[in-house]
Length: 292
Image (cartoon, rainbow, N blue to C red; front, top):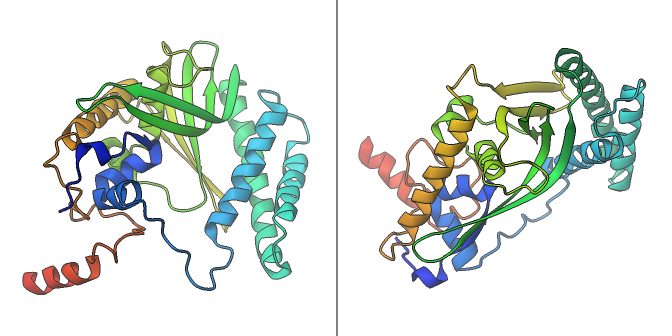
């Protein structure tokens, strides 16, 4: 139950770290108070994170190059760009041969999905890619800064905004997004409403929160949108998520509030870098034995 002095507690976190703070506060303590960095595994090779970097890099370059325009030969040119990004990673031949067809399938899926979107809704008024945001908010122990980088933000001519995230792994469950356990996209939307992204007007409306799952497998891509049909208002969801964050910041500005490890059974993080440091395997096994 580590409860460090408030002066040692973090005053700046990223949007992605907020989910960690909810599911595993101890990880925030270990990284930002103890300043411990996880060690790479022995003989660690290229993994899913490298794959994700290639996908993000290619899509960022594509949007920066074309913006709202959409070339007729988009699929061919996008595939070539994916191959360029793959070659620049200088991977061993076997891994490159394994990933190449997957990336080509992603390029095809993205071209088709984007064409379909524009046929249905028309081209966006503006697109931002890898946009950096920052909001400073008041808190009991002093200003707290939230930072984030949105994979993509689309704006239409009517002031509607679609906040989009690319995933090459598992998507969060929609119920977890709505319940606040996976707050990344709602928090990015909230930052927009707070004026945290300079190029996006704060008086906009949040029209969609969208995930693209890009694996390149048998089903190379999947689009999942949390739309106003699923909640009363995505703007209200963003505002509620923001209020929840303010309450969490205030709670941890109390010097008696400890940074617990995995305090919510059933809501543990999928990957826990500090689980062994917190001795999670020991006490979780003991809890299981006692329950039995």
